[in-house]
Length: 249
Image (tube, rainbow, N blue to C red; front, side, top):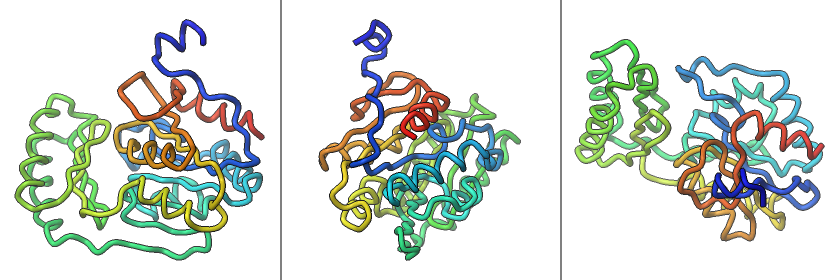
């Protein structure tokens, strides 16, 4: 282990072997750099080509597991990945195209109303409604971080929604499946069943995925700065993650 790896706390992953792997990849912060506004992340030829080649080499054992909506994942990835878990696992499209979706929680309209009222304080506060959740982004208004966190916690307590904390975002989501549940569901089906699962993600929303793959005999790869995590390996950022994936082809 190098000095850099010791300082980082986790080793870099070994070269990726595609023969027996099943890959589960987060999107924002893993395959695409974090943008100031969610809508600013757009398709990228390098990323699309990489995912198309990976899916072919893996015989379809590739899934994107994201907090974004299914439509947004397809927009950014140009529809190149069949298996997708969206809204942190509340929506899942399997490799055959079947879509499984939770029912929206009754408290979502109230949550969206409260978040929009909070966001009226500053133009840098952005509310993203996803059908099964509502998210308050404060990356462009960091001075409101503590107030945004308190607001989201209060609304979660009032409505019974699940509070999902991310990187400069507070999300109130319908209770239900998480990213780990999605991994387990994929791994119980063809073409994933029997493969060694690897989950690559960048923040706390991916921890359930790391735990799931480890229990299934696989490993998690954390992307970004060192932090407390259930992942076994770490890559320093999006460019390193893309390069690690490309090296396997």
